[in-house]
Image (cartoon, rainbow, N blue to C red; front, side, top):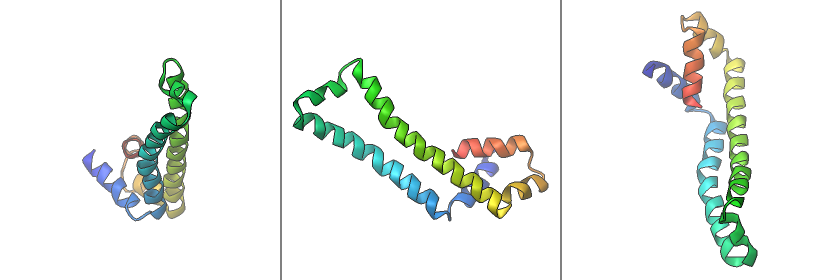
Length: 108
């Protein structure tokens, strides 16, 4: 299983789009959280964002944008696999379909 994850990582490492989307997610989450904290200090009724039961609505809304980026990342990975033929080559070289899908699942 470690070899499958290493093989997937070597395929993803040179993709600029992978690093771009990963950077947006890693920088975006703290930025949004700090931005919400500053918003609460500036707007009088904004403290409602962090009160129960409303907090779940706002957190789910913000998380939905980051899951959209994760979906874009999955599309980029799979389309590059299809474009360069590495998906078919892995199966031809003896990797089972189950192992192939498990490797993709662990990377995502």
